[in-house]
Figure 1 (spheres, rainbow, N blue to C red):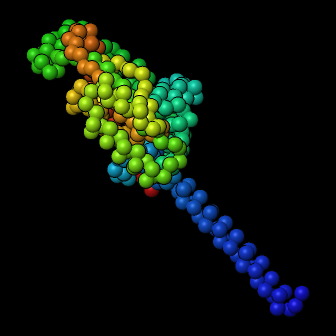
Figure 2 (figure 1 turned 180 degrees about the vertical axis):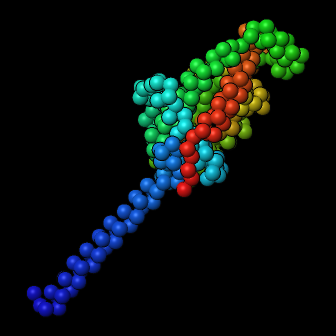
Figure 3 (figure 1 turned 90 degrees about the vertical axis):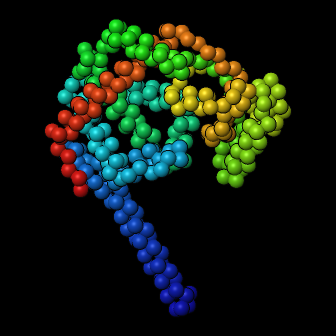
Length: 314
């Protein structure tokens, strides 16, 4: 080996070692930044990584990123709720958390693996969501137990509230919806332009869809489109947001396309039947009254806990 080649080889080794050292330094700095503590709650730290993860979780579904302080307050409240486990000597098992995680996935028409993949695409670890689930389970159980007597719904008050509600015909009416899910299949990992193309195809079908009989028959002839079996839902079992969507379209029409892990999905409203069953009305009203009372007690109790907790923002 010539003297020049020897020196060049040496400089290459030095440069490579320097690059490795720089990469290691940057990696350590990144880890240190992630582990940077932004708050303490009764001595328990909340890190910058926790804050980043929760912000991403709360931004899912195209929502605007929440304010930093709002996310931080949410994490503080979560720590306070988890600390109640020791105070009330209760336990929330990993199985309960996993079951709730699976139930959440099912409500989104997903399995747990698909939900985990959906979170992963947004840069959210499943543990971030499970941490919130655990806090909610703890909080729900403790508030219900602590204020059990106050959360009992008086039947007389319930009937009186129902009669008052019936004066408003719109509020008294319940509906039964017959729906057909229509899915434009999009393979996993497809590029954004491919997803957008399928969305445009779904919109085109929605524009020409005039009835379930003809529309579904036409949809079945389209490439990579699945029409699923009919499902029936009562308005008492739907969220106000979903009921508003279904009440906003005519029978025989499709809802707006929504992106899911399987593709672009819409629902055909094939029938809408009015039902004035008192049972449905009582069930819905009972849940509303319980929710109002629960939230009132929960808000007051959390305020008390925060006033006595040792909270230090960094």
